[in-house]
Length: 68
Image (cartoon, rainbow, N blue to C red; front, side, top):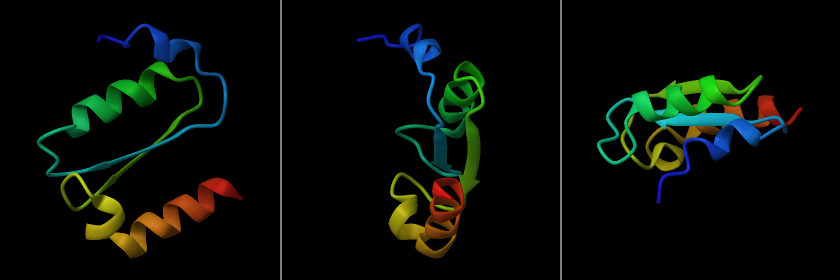
């Protein structure tokens, strides 16, 4: 299911976090999302698909800062 056109309709604060080594959802996919969602913040962390575990400290810092 291709949802690429749908993301342009997102109009709420959005944080896109990707892992540098994610083979399932590569950084290029995250960059695309962030570019399509007005005002989105893009963050790339060292890790693969589970950056919330693989880079937990940095992930938490970015998330908390975004939620402020």
